[in-house]
Length: 294
Image (cartoon, rainbow, N blue to C red; front, side, top):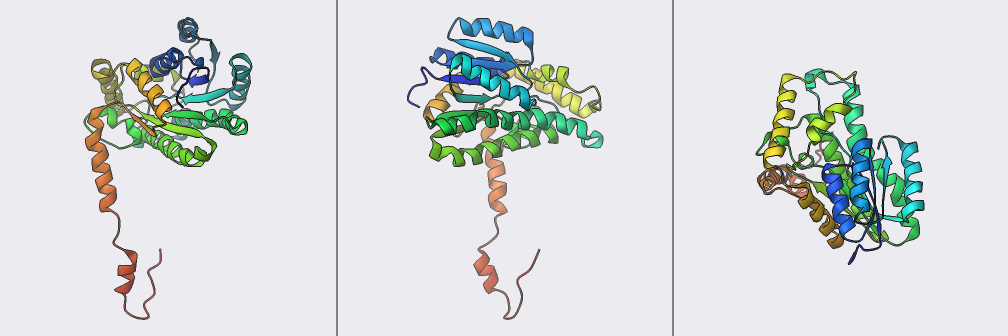
């Protein structure tokens, strides 16, 4: 996309934080913007801010609700025009200790972080394909979707959170390949620390029936909140990175320089695990020996 002006974008988790910052950056680029969120109060404020910059609409939406998602998709396109930029940004930072794991938390975290991304793709991408006018999808994962561990507790956020974000990375990478011939780009946003209240906001959405946080998970989440408040980059920096990635069709959007070492370590570990040439191993077998089976 050489220019985004005149296009329409849909952004989930758009009432505050990274989502609102992305919406601001899109609006300043001449894009009409629809934002969706569960926080009605924040959504009204976001609507006022964005309406001062561009044509904007806001919608109350739980990204797990497929029926409501379809209704909102129809409403957006009726009010702002065909959507060609989709930002599946809604997500939560929450997890559970392996000793307390249950289906409630699995369904909760995966339903929002992974299922919500898929629901956004399902709602808009088939329409984009039918129109044949191209477009772009941005899916928000996390640095925690690229590696486990690293220079801070934010990168040790619990197996459930990591699983949900690794899923978004894999979905984005594979979808990018499959949508390329339709002229639809796909980028995955993998932020490090960003100065938002996302960690604490996630607590308000935790199911009442979910097990209490273990002391370790509670410590990790509290440390993650403090880290992003003290060292996180501005969400508006992230918003501008996202717009640049859409224009340049970049596959990955990273926000923190301290991710490089952990990404390199994971890559090295994967390369070290690659077996020798299977043909050379086959040649070492004695005549008549069957190949090993799994």
